[in-house]
Image (cartoon, rainbow, N blue to C red; front, side):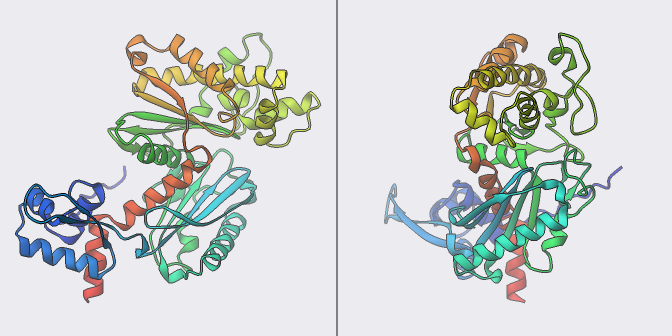
Length: 404
């Protein structure tokens, strides 16, 4: 059993707590902060001056007041520092340097083989980070946080990769330890689909409390938002949709069950993921190598590929219907390179979810394509880092350290 410790909460009148009010949008003027917290004008003024002097805040636009002088609003200072972000996929990695509002200052992308192991992969990430900083004329000292997404389960508190099905050599690897000698800042690591869910939720659907993000690309996975918060499970394995057993549906005609990359037979991925479709198409003589090649053929209207994607969508929908009945989200967002190739896969998913799920679970259920598409995980990384940097406890500790 894991030890559970009670977190030390910041004082309600601390600078960190006031910064959290401003960042959330609940209170962005001195008058509103006083009203929400009940603190005196002098106390609020002192806290704000501390945050402004430390660079956390800047003055925004002047807002209308119900009486007296117009109020000057406050917001997070985007120039407080920069964030380094990496979405490491099985076949490709995308990286970005962003300001503290998440605005991209520089970006890059390159092919990647996740099975090359953590040292080789993270060395390339570090090289790209250094290149992005150079391009934007920034220094390592300005980096306030690093966000990393990987295609496997992560023990979130430590950033430790846990028994990943496709990440050969990564099991037990603590990703933040690799960056510790190079950057003195928080390093947050999460499963890529969790970051996709977080990014889509914060940027597109902030008012939806219960949603699922399902990615169908090289692999298949799901990220969960429940009560407005990401749900990762006990060891980071929540949402592993791609490894549900689908042999009963996928091999209805009989025959041997296909072997999945995880070693089991009959997993959803073995029928419907990009790596499986690529293998099937190669067997038919198609010149395909990665999931992006399959998506390109679908966009060209290849009849065999379109039919294959529609069937894949049905199988994903069959598995997703079970999750919908179990978790009852109000929104399912479908992303990933195969989901972005026209609406063939989305149509198959909708068909099966609405047919198989309980009526109560689908009464108000929406199933939509991702609006952020390829950017979802990087947007999620930015929010994850900002949450760490601007957490009340972190802010108060940093201010105390500066004062010391």
